[in-house]
Image 1 (tube, rainbow, N blue to C red):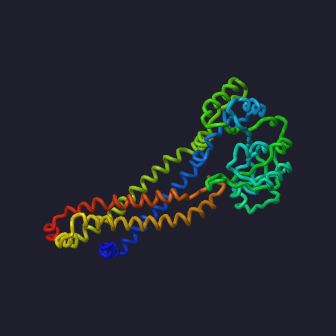
Image 2: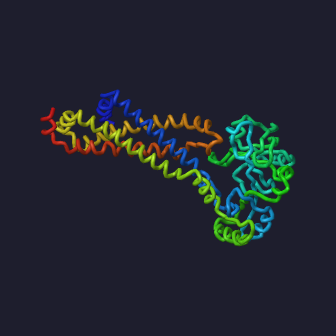
Image 3: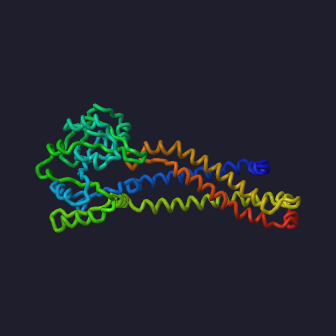
Length: 382
């Protein structure tokens, strides 16, 4: 800190340039944080997937059904702890823009297979007693201002026409902030009463829990072998593999974001490095005087690196502060159209680390140049 006055005096010598550099850095760090949040949102399903859960879909496509009669056969396979089945409903609440995932669930086994999605026991009991009952994720309930007891009309798009009405009997919460709290669940029995005869006895997919994750490969193979050469062949995957394949349908999001992130990183290097190169060139005479009166080469290098680091840290803190404020707002704007946006402390930590690395690297070349500068040559240019 004994060189603090010198460093701050150099920083604020060109105030406009300093503000523009910090502003450019802040915008780039904000973009870095936003891209990291989007990447995390699309990859969250795979990251949060239960290691002890398998997903069973029709081998042809997930939009093709599977017989409900498969459930008992799957349960007899050693290693299977519990199984539930889901159907995609795909209805519309008031307007197509109000998208949220709606699933027909097996209420007897849903909580055994998904223990991380928490519903209060009294709410679950009320849900079981009501054929038109529904359980709503906390984020969706907050988005539309729903509360327990509300009656919600949802227009069917796949299973006939007209509005299906549901009573909100409970609100579920995830154990972790990243858990999906946007789903809307309603009962299998009530659903079966309203669909056509040719649709009865078929479900969209199964999700099962294993006694131990070590059984995943063996159980998956046993299930697919059990129904091989049948009219409804199956494809069984771990939940993480299923989630990853689902994201791939949107394209290679990870590669796109990493590419943009790399461009952002090198832009930061160029902007900060150019600023420091100009600053060192402008102060050639001063740095030569420092060396002439006894300051070491390492001290001169320290001056340049410290200045570069302070610029990058200031820009990084401003940019990440913007992210903390703006990203939750953007998350509300796109809610229902893409996975929830969640700015985790890990992303903020990586952003700050990136700022430090860029500050050190961008100041290194000008600093080394200043360190090896010969005093007599520098003074001759003054």
